[in-house]
Length: 357
Image: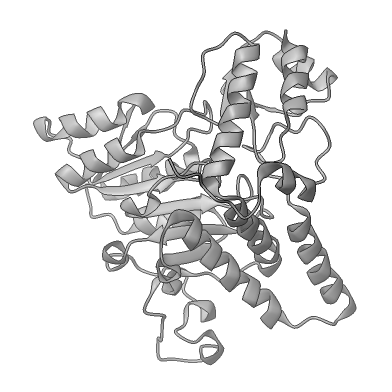
């Protein structure tokens, strides 16, 4: 087997973060590497003193778009930018035909659930199944009267860390002609997949992509874009944004930029260096590091190995015990959730294990 070459190994990369020991909560908020933090502080200082030229901030938006496209294996022409997952998924939901059906996991995070549920007034139905049965449920659909128009799911479940069988779900949906919409917020940045196999892949960048909150991206396949309306179109959605400041006619970009909203520039100033650093490290290397640490934690608790960078536990008083040890984690669905990323060390993991055992 030929060894994989990376521009930067994990130990070298970790020197670019200033994380205090015990941060095991990337599934809530990712920590910025120093290049992202510095870029953001520079932009803020320019703004503060009136030395700003927003064109440079906009260059960061283009850089971030290109980096996201590379992370998911797509063309920048197929990437639109926004601020939230739900707003980007809402573009697809608004284009559903009347009486469409959506199939989704029962534990789905509501950013990929509410946009479908609010279409109930048009007769849209949402069917929920256990996350682990999603591909099976899609395969069973042709034998029922509830064949889905859309299969919507998180690549990694926020509440549990469960990793979806992405290819199996996509294959099943393709077999019945259903559109596939994936919330990959808890996945892109550490989980390697052929993401562009889906029709829409939406990511909020402030978790595993370690950007400031307010930057989001969506891959929209060309055949899907033909059915969508740019409901929030403004100057930035123009074919040439600088020529779209005033007046008609409507002159939108011909690619996925037609769905852009005017960017919160500072968020993208911080996003671009963080994502470029992930590309330098390599998602495959990040995946091995993150899952390896998650399994070190699981082994410390006597649990079998898993395939996720997120681990949840129902150990009594776990949140308080972790907090006393200086470990910052989250509580989701009644369980403590710990998550492991590039800047996480074995010492962080061992601190958590000691607190819980």
